[in-house]
Length: 347
Length: 175
Image 1 (tube, rainbow over the protein chains, first blue to last red):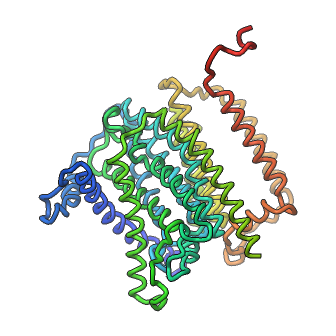
Image 2: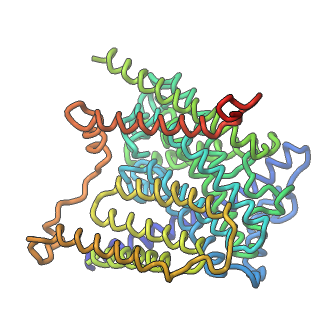
Image 3: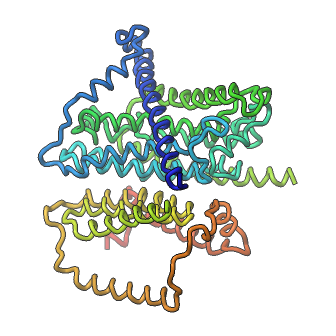
């Protein structure tokens, strides 16, 4: 088999693995979101499908979505309308490539992992704008414009708030940063490290900016259903709509995973040094730890969504430009001086 | 072989996007085609082993500048025939002459022939090298800091121009 064919084969296998994981994870997240919403609003959420606490609700929903009619309005820009879900889905899947799920379990240990995720997250925005424009619906265009304004203002704090951990570990690679947090029997996470105060300052900034970047409530202005029907995906039905849905939950998981890998030790867990490196038990536990940490952050995103009311667009802009951007710049400065001080102490 | 295939795929995306951007009647569609060109060019950078450049291209051009273009376009009044291709002659002439000049400078005295892929240097992680080159006094530190101060000035200036003025208008506007 020639080398390039091997590469293509590896890419196909990786794609199937990533897509399978993504689908299952999204189905679980949607069910979890509905249960979390239920508990926060003092009701029970889905209970019927599948028996135990409605665990099969997402499966039933996705089968229903697959069989829905695929509608395209007559005035719509058919090409853009059709490309947009594919673009959004492709970028969401591509972000999974650099996530370190366990030691060595990573599709590609890109040297620029975090950078790649930031770049692809900004491309998702283009897909959303494309969807809004192609839909031939004024609500969709409003949603797209809000998305453009919102993401243009929150991309800066998001990128800047990622700089402190990058400075501390001296790498863009999520796997290298995770390995560097393995001390103290798996407990030397960035939030417990020698730069802990900087980590506590930068993580809330990262989390808020990630919420805005993923257009999650209270920043879900692009699809504000009380004002814009459903925002940029008003006109989408069936499988195309489910692509946007998949993208939202995939992006949540990716942001949770980035937070987990840079601030909370990634796949490290307490007692990891007791296990033999490379053993199957360690791999499985590490995978479990990583997914659990990422899902814990996803849970916080859901918690925020069902607790905090939606902001107005001017509040979103004020928060982004007047508070988050200067704060993240200040945190970068503090992080730089802190790391400099650490080097002085060590030398 | 793989290199050639990816080169051709990304070239077709880049050039095709450019052609669509040029000849499409709707401005918004042109903008999206330009986005395809940015992605194609980023892919070409990747095939050359310049991963940092490629992802910067995606982040800044495809993700950032494109969003601002589209935002601006959506604030302007649409019309079905936004493009007037009759006025393209001067631009085409200028671009063609510049391109000719550029290629002449580039390829004057070049030795033609394909380098076998095996002899190309292996792509290596570039972020650390770029960072060290920029942030050392013997490197590009002063130019880098100068550029960042200019950008900061531009940022503060734009905020000053755009901010809402409360109270009576200043004297120079009243006069």
